Amino acid sequence: MSLYFDNEKLFDAEGHLTDAGLYALKDGTLDDLGALEAAEHLSFCDYCLLRYTALIEAAPEAMKQPMRDLIPQVQSLMRLRSFRIMTNRYVSAAAAVVLGFVLWGAVSTFGLPDVLTAQQPTTPHERFGTKFSTAVNGFYKSLDDTFKSFTLTAENGLDQIRAQSIGGSTAKGE
Image (cartoon, rainbow, N blue to C red; front, side, top):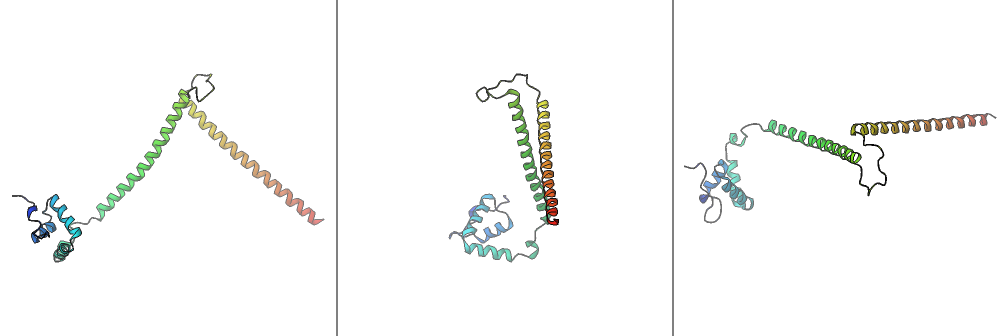
């Protein structure tokens, strides 16, 4: 004996869901194909939808309540998905950085083709770590030079403002 409702008895001669078919849908005893056919029929047949809604509303209040609280499970899934999304973003960014360094190292190690560069290296290729260290040190040196230049410009500007204010106050006093 099958646990599922017979799909041949799902619809009557007029094409509407039978009462037994509605009960099978409510009880969950339809197989996947029967449930799909019944759901599709309810999406466009107002008569059967009203009958199905009345059937559900007539159910005892205990049957309308969920068997268990789904909020903790849904919240857990939401936290997991948000963690995966954030992790994927950071992993993608890290992979892009690593790929950039690898390509940079490959180009600097093997050099560009002669078509792209007119100069030939005169020294043997350095190790990647040495080149990386040199590049980082160069970056910090240029950053330090920029800050020194900014500080010097700001101090010169302040000196000019002081000189104008001192010159302006002596001119007023005369």
